[in-house]
Length: 404
Image (cartoon, rainbow, N blue to C red; front, side, top):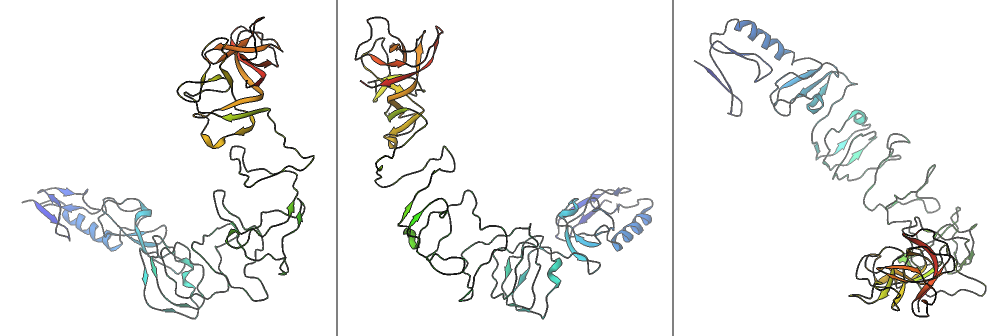
């Protein structure tokens, strides 16, 4: 008659036929009825249970709740789920000596933890998370390694909080208030910097500016590169800087990031703005996506379209991607409102050969060409070429253009 093995929770583990032995359902051998040599199997099972399957690796076919003594670490472990064969996944319960490691799952401390000197927490490896620590702690509590998550510490009085060493970082979240002495400092940085991550939108906010000796000062005055290094603001974003600044260069962190100048600015006598590129452009709404150098005219479903006819007198300008000054920037993006050069140097898409100085007229389909004798007039001329193009096919040439 077959044996049916029932687990502690009432579920069936396995059924063992007569004259057989089961070695795959658990870490033990389970002999069936009339199995020859069952005594040796039972004795072996007793020994393995007594030594808690002492080995450097977990036993095969473990069951949830089974014990295993890890001979490498010298610790007793509990199997968290059936067939867990990875050593690190077992729950480590106890150490065989004071230098071993004891870890648990979630730990709740609900009373007061009081001691003259709590040093045993040095080797408290928080394998999971301490989710509740709601207690008054007195004495020397130090070197707690791990993560205290969503914890509430009532009051902790300490002289020093460290993260382990200079290369081990830590994190403070939330709003913290630091009180120093009335005549001293609240935060002292011995080495390194007060740093903000690259994607941070925060900075240092203060209501009073002080020298290193604590004496306040008013930042109004004339500033140059040698005596000012940051934009200064006061409470609620109100500027406390009312003087003049004379830097030799103002840049943004990246070319494609750009920046914003607010207010009305005036160039003083003798001052000027200089740019790398040489065309003045304005955004116009286009009926299609046009690349740089395309010759456009007013018309189409939107404001501009690629010039359609040869020698067109409706020619309006050339799409630019190198504007020295771009107007109407808020109208849209390059794919919907491309910049159109209305004056200055710009690359122009042309067909055929072009000589330096040639007048450019429309060739149709968004292209220009060199005007033949008698073709150019005040209405169809796009501009004049500034370079030679010696090939017959399509290409680009730098030209000086102007809207008529």
